[in-house]
Length: 328
Image (cartoon, rainbow, N blue to C red; front, side):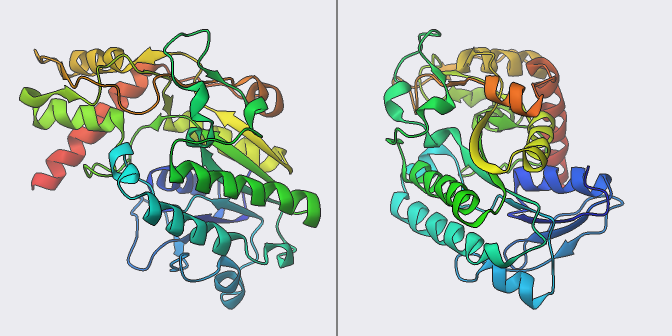
């Protein structure tokens, strides 16, 4: 699909970016990673190209023009990200930085005539919070039909909406092909393990390995989520950028619901330890969010194939090795 294509990945050293770059390189693409100076990744047997750039201050267009890079595809992944507490304690910073990154990522891209497709990585956080206040499985499915209703629960969500609008307007007004992906709770190897950046699954796995005596959930564990293994997410992104050109928003995630308590119990089972689950009184974040993936199934001929048990086991093994390596 990407053999001999030039592919630019902004934020290519992050969790999603690292896995995407690995997949693209394996297919024979020329991959250029746009990331902050000093931010690198190491992939065995893969030679990577870097275009160091702080997209809060510099436009992607200027970087590509200066280096004479003519991309076939651009994956817009760069963003200020983190765990729910981290982002909600820094709403102004999150909005300012992500709006700057998004504006600089899209500036003058209509002048890049080699471009066959671009993808903006959005998030479930762009959905209205009004539809995420219950754990009733009949009422928590989020559909792209809600795309024109805006009331996200965070500045992070607002920034993602702005990126989606840019993709749509570029497609409509400038004939620049593009698609936005609203990604739901993705997990797997290469995720950040720092406390302020980590998400629920890696956070609980780290606790099970390093602090089983303090295995505490953020909330009462009744929150309902779906979880998508990273390999399935990467396949969806690659399909979307080569098949969708009209600026559409598409959900990518698993449509199988699980409570946070369910996830915690599965992780404890994988650990083989006798761990007691503690919880905090109040639920944290949305009470329930599950994607309607019928649009992805129809437009991309895509659906998840990795079971939760298999994905959790792979992720547990990777995190355990990473933590052991950090101790050396």
